[in-house]
Image (cartoon, rainbow, N blue to C red; front, side, top):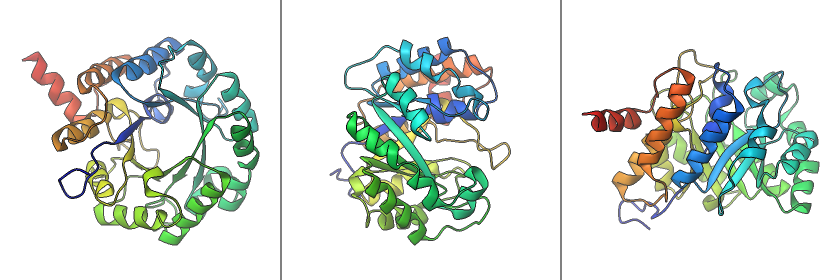
Length: 306
């Protein structure tokens, strides 16, 4: 453990920009740009890149090129390329695309589950049974993602036991890792620790990951707080890609550059080259025709330009 406040010596950063980030962007990007983005991120040292989603292009048009992206990326040894799959049709597409990991998703909020996918939490997770079985049979890693674990745009507070219940259901599916996600970015440090510690009663804390959105500017603080209680896997999005659909004008995922700057300052190993990530953030922001929302990325880029 790190000498400072019992922090980990090393963390794993899962880069979600090419999937969770881009799917919330209004600007449509070509498969060429997405392939380049994934390749740059893998070269920067990420051990896990969320590269695709096999969901209906009617609902998520940005992910319509997922099969082409997985077919064309440079596969780097030791890198897990993940794909989000809602059902067996999505799983078959991910398998054909040679994804290393499939991601299934549920919500901790009953109201969110009903509003978004028109079924209960229990029904939504039961649907993943065949996907989990197929993942085991084909030797694919299975990751579960739990949205609205810290707050819901429809019901507000989400009880700790509701989060723990979904963690247990994901555990029983056979998930190798479970993401605890602050979908609307409302959590603060103490709340983050309470949720993570309750989730850890159902699943090993070293296999839990924190997925924080930066709507209220608390994501970096929440990551630090989660590390204090033993979490050492975090999700982030290069250049802060992705909006928050429930808070107009808000940023979405915490920016990777900001997370890496934090880890660098704490002496925590990530295996990722911050300079290359800053370059990648500048590249994708230029493709989208806007400025990166990463404060660290913009500051480091400005320092270079002096």
